[in-house]
Image (cartoon, rainbow, N blue to C red; front, side):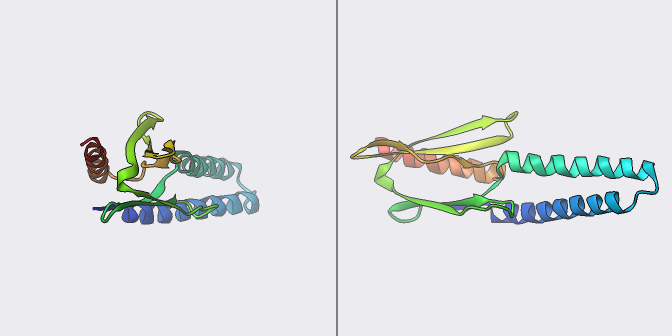
Length: 156
């Protein structure tokens, strides 16, 4: 089974690019249009609004997320959806080593982080958390079903 959120991430990239363009445009208008103090207050308010929305996107850590459980391994790929300082990460876990998972919610339930726990002959290890915030509710449900199935198969 393959679960990803490429369409949501594509939309987020567009929203982020528009957001950054609006911040730059408002800053340019603020610095080059100094005639009307009322308009300058509007520019400052808009700059603050767009900056706050961009900082919220950064805080929520909206990730592109891909999981493929076909075959003998579980493949995870993820990267941040914002265009700056993007780090591509991936890991592959053999299905017999999958042990457990944790989903932690924060920021009023809007931010969800997935931690994968594996158990191999050397011990139990946790992989770094992956943000699930950008996954819609259907794919989130499918992911929890998949992870529960992997976990229950391990118990048998």
